Image 1 (cartoon, rainbow, N blue to C red):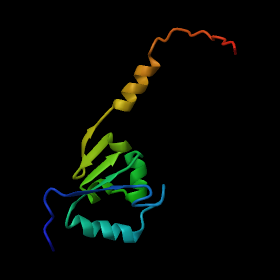
Image 2: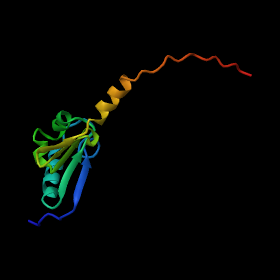
Image 3: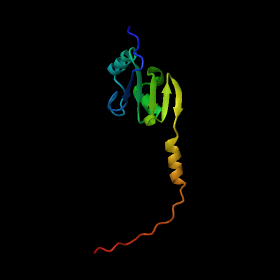
Length: 112
């Protein structure tokens, strides 16, 4: 078996790349990814949370790939362990919800 190429990472989107949208990965694709992982570092990226990605790629997805990026990269796993999370979306939504916006008036425009 060839050694992994240092400094090379192959990233794959989940939906419409590794699987049909919201469907389970095929055995052929799983085999391909396992073989590819022998020669390069592999990462998967999905817009869904880890639960949904696991439904598509398998319950042990964080151990089957070197990197897993869920929620569009806001939650990251490396070598089966949580690498970090970004709470940007929650912060932004709370910030917007808590804004004290003055009441706006409806202005009628006359058509000339």
